[in-house]
Image (cartoon, rainbow over all chains, first blue to last red):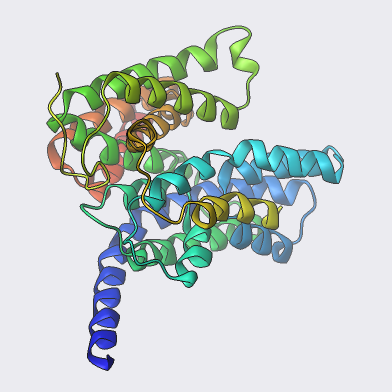
Length: 253
Length: 90
């Protein structure tokens, strides 16, 4: 029994170590984004402590932008909560997708700790792990990400002009580069996924530029397009066997 | 706000405790990350920087580097460098 437990602990530590380096680009990217967010937070009169607690607790970029925006316009409690739900509803979908990657033996600590680690980027990295996901891998990715995110907002508030504009400008694409490195390699092996990505991007462009559609918030845009496009994809080409096992890509027929 | 966000994230883990057997729902969840990340990346990436041209360059560089390197850190760095270099020229 104790042997099994030490083996599990060692395995968890290994997974944690594998996750850590993934946190470097994520943490750097978060730092840059949080830095910009910090300047906004300062402008609406938040204290650095408030901003730190908000960032470390929420771990959400779009969600926090929306929250700051509403706070500054003096919105009520209900409106803030509703917006928070809508902007972040995609995390519900991501969480649902991740549950299928977890080992069948589920621990309560995973149920409570893993949700905190779900952000767009960390979900992206975690969902692309081959085979089952050890939650400790995600915790490893999360560590540096949280540090980057919550220090970023404080540094942005207190020393908004320490980083030159060109550096902030360049760092602003880091997160997107990361997204691309998550979705593009699988498209090499599976043409269907490649087509799916192109369609998703095209629809996204239409939704941000078209007259009426562009009024839809970015959170809602993500939800609508994800449900519709992934739903149609699932109808056209259902995945057999163990879809969560990354590598097992079915033949495109 | 913190509580609301946490509940949204935790619910699926609390509700879905076993493997989903439904073939459609399983396939749907399999495609979710690709669609979500694609929607979030584009067109946001081209509007992220000061100049549209830098953003477009970052996208092209990102696509090419991701395709060949399959490495997260290298791809993210190359995108940043592309923006940096292009801002020197513009």
